[in-house]
Image (cartoon, rainbow, N blue to C red; front, side, top):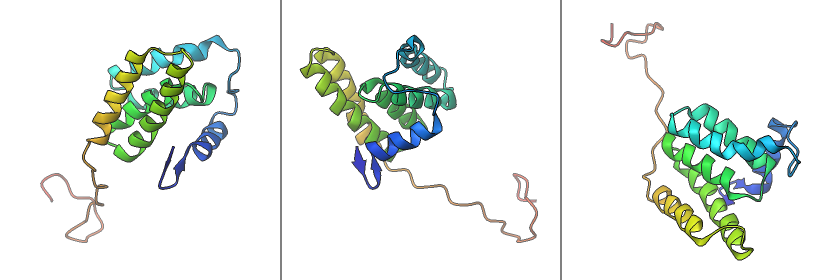
Length: 146
C-alpha cells in the first residue's frame, strides 16, 4: 500500500493511535461483525459510521482484506479516488494471499478485483475551490448573492 505517501505501516500506526483500545488479532468476537456492520452503514449511506467501522476492522484484523475493501468502497462512494485506490489495491493483495492459503474462494477475489477496476476507472475529482465573497463585504451572501 504505497502511493504518494500512503503506506500500510504508517496508515496502520495512525489508526492504532486513533483506536488504542483495539488490539490487533485480539480474541474479541465483536470485531468479526464489523464487516457486516460496515456494509450495512454503507448501504444506508451512513458514510461516517461505515468509515469508522472499517477503520476499526483494519486495526483489529490488518491482514484481512474486508476492512481495506470496505473502506475503499466508502471512499469510492464519496468520490475520494486516491485513497480508495490505495486501499482497494491492498485489499486485492491480501485477498490473493488468502486464496493461496485456501482461506478465501477465488470468486470473492474476483469480486474485489471488480471493485478495484471500478475505482481505478473513476475520474479524478479536483478539490473544491473555496467560496469567494465577491462583494468583499466580509458577510456571507445568501443563495441569490445578496
